Length: 94
Image 1 (cartoon, rainbow, N blue to C red):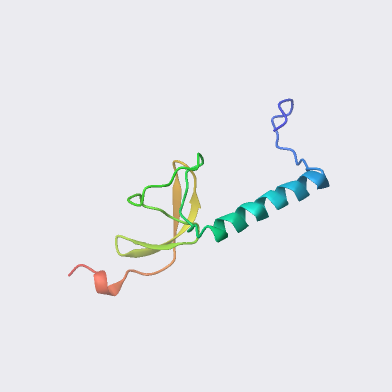
Image 2: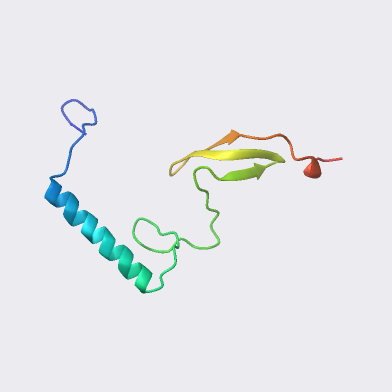
């Protein structure tokens, strides 16, 4: 962000830096595959997310109170569900 204009500005890395970063990513992925590492969710500080935590993914379909929603947006304090289906007949209250 440009502090003078308070606007985001596009910046581009030099090609040599892009090549270096791509090589690092490839080496990291190869090392993870060779070690048999599984894809487990991590916090930004690289600690594992506890398996007891509820986890959502963008595009995931979830049922809430007998109605179907799709996860449309997530940030650290907000989640947006968009309705995608009718009430589930098998779960209607009688």
